[in-house]
Image 1 (cartoon, rainbow, N blue to C red):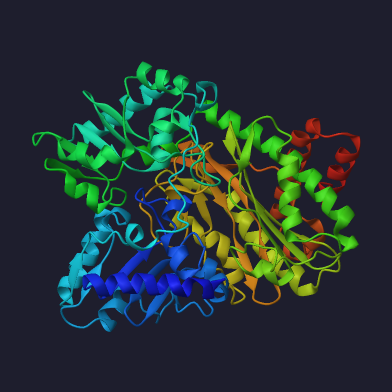
Image 2: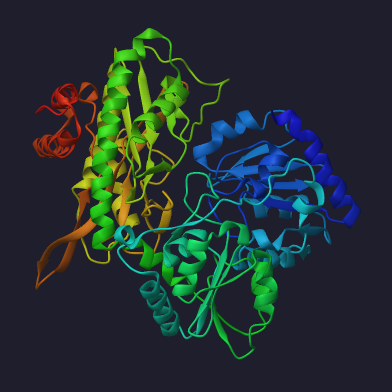
Length: 594
């Protein structure tokens, strides 16, 4: 596949030579700084062949590089073979960053160009400062995609958007907009420009299908007391949605009119811009007072209300029941040699789609058998998919989008004959997973302060994992959302009641197996004392048993054994009403007391 991209790489270089550009950075994002994007903006994939969700390409006239993180090292190495691109590792000591590599490889006076729509205010400012320090010139108006990707480029999505009923959202769009503007006023502004697709969908109680696995729609939103404007292609709006928008006071303008509209905003207006999310190009269009501040919507969206949490709990029950059926199918068919990793994903969709509220998966299932489990974000295709047999480990990371909640779960199971190393490593990972789940922590605690709880058992034996331990999860929105997380990197956002976060330590042995165990956990009120203040703890939301055949009981404390037994009892009690007698019997065996 990668060899086919060589002509695309040459097309980019030809345009660079024509315009006197020495280097161009091509990120894997869109004008909304999205993690997962519509095919219309996948220029990086088109030119390099790399398809991971995180990766930045740099092209010079005689070199090309692709930077990605540890989740994609193995995938990138395979996809970039013979592509003209070298792979570079992000966040690895001794490895040059994108900026360091550019500074080292461009001559004095060279031109570094980017498409300013694809770079945030903060990113563009950093690049411009780096260019100044290194004698380079910076240009942010190089829209390379429109110049070279003239054949086969997907058009902007035209799918209809729909109303996310308040019975699921738990709050009206009018109330949300009022809360957002109240926060904007506190920051000293009187309006806000919102480019983030998930923030727009949440604010307006609307959903779409423009991005695979995430129910968002391509648009921009401008909010003030006097003007509320949604910039969107008209083809996406039916009469019901148009009437709804009118009823909540939101005007509609064409998507491509956003730059001109911003250019006409009164010079006396004070607009809040999130420097990490608003594109450099659109920020430059504004000729008014600008307040640079983190969008308040991220925090408002992260703290779920009681209606959302009740819906998420119900979604977890239906999801767990679907996974019971998937696991029973796996056990019955693994020994036949007829099915591969892709078939597992297809079966997962089949069972989950039996729920009337199912609206698709929340990401592409990772079904990694044996050595494929060691590829953190492995994605099987018809060429790579391994046939499953009745032995070895199978790592399944999957999730679903339901109207009332988003799920994300990882389980590693033995299909037969587990080795002592597999059992030992599985138990180490499980101990870290359990430690996060039972943590109680004072108000104000950040995820970075908890992260070591998940890693310490691996660290004690000279092992670790390079991804984060936990990410925020949306409500019928992105399976990855901020602002909170649990990872080694410092993040100033505290964990607050109402936030849903994943708990997913793992360990990966290249060429052998991968192990990860993941539940979603909800921050809830814990203990309180006059002397020490408020404490929070986690409620485990995900409902599915661990694989007891992979647990070394001698490595567990009495507290951990009780924790597993209590969790398994809850799993059986919550899932059994959704199951038939045979399924209940299977689940009873999987959740029996250790």
